[in-house]
Amino acid sequence: MATITVMGHCPADTDSTCSPIAYAWFLKEIKALDAEAVVSGKLNKEAEFVLQKFGVKAPQNIASVSEGDKLVLIDTNNPEELVKGWESAEIIEIVDHHKLYGIKTSNIPTVTVRPYGCVATVLWELMAEAHDKTPKDIAGLLLSCILSDTLKFTSPTTTEIDKKSAEELAQIAGVDIESLSSEMFAAKSNLDGMSAHDILLTDAKDFNFGDKLFKIGVLETTNPDASLSKRTELEAEMKNIISGESLAGMFFFVVNILTSESTLVTVQPSDLEIAEEAFGATRQENGLLILPGIVSRKKQIVPSIEKVVAL
Image (cartoon, rainbow, N blue to C red; front, top):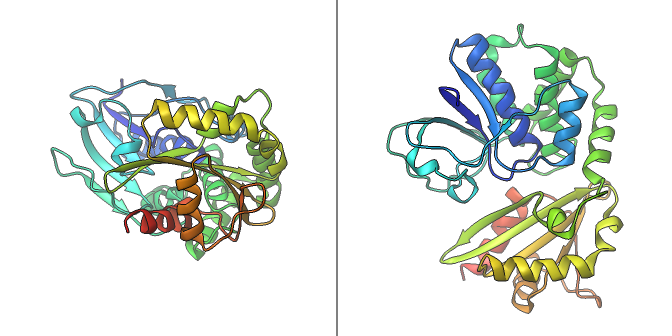
């Protein structure tokens, strides 16, 4: 393994797959450090598309890290999302755009956390000295991360800095933002060959609310019916996941990118009650919650659920 391992959260989404690649390039080519980007777990279809689109090789996939490994964490500071063995490794840097989760380190890392819609925007600022040296493929990866995380600037997490950075990166990469977004969202929405387990966990994160562990999954798609038509299989697998991982509960949000609304699937009455209170919504006759304007797990979903669970 390289001297410095650059990686995001587990499982990785487009941002936490491609942003580490870009930052590892910066550390290696500009800062002359021995750095390598890695992932842990299966890549999602959008990330695979982006890598193929810009001709970039997928990062090495690792199962764990060990004592003596030096880590740069990108897009997370949440212990629940880190690779196995992280406690014994040396975390030398954290670059993130999420709230602080109280990660404990044995050393003093460099920490950069900024309230932007995407960690790639934070990285683009940190990489200022390399803006005139950034190759098209690296610019394309960073641009794709911003478009993915902000849902092409429609997420409430989006800032003007995200938009400005995206425009700069699009110019370097030589791509059209509208066309790239359409291609990415088509790849994101493709469920071919995916099991119910895959669909639920492709973008799922664990959260400790007090002494209770919840899993919150999100599926961002332009075709929500493709997943909701599999509701029976999804609910059966959710029950298996809750039982197998000893979760207090699980929420699965199907985010319609085109209409900026979510449909929430739950399997426990207590979870549905939590969601109704959290979002001020009333369940449909079919037991689903329709949540207009709710698209961001970071800014809308997690804070709302946490507030209710903590009561």
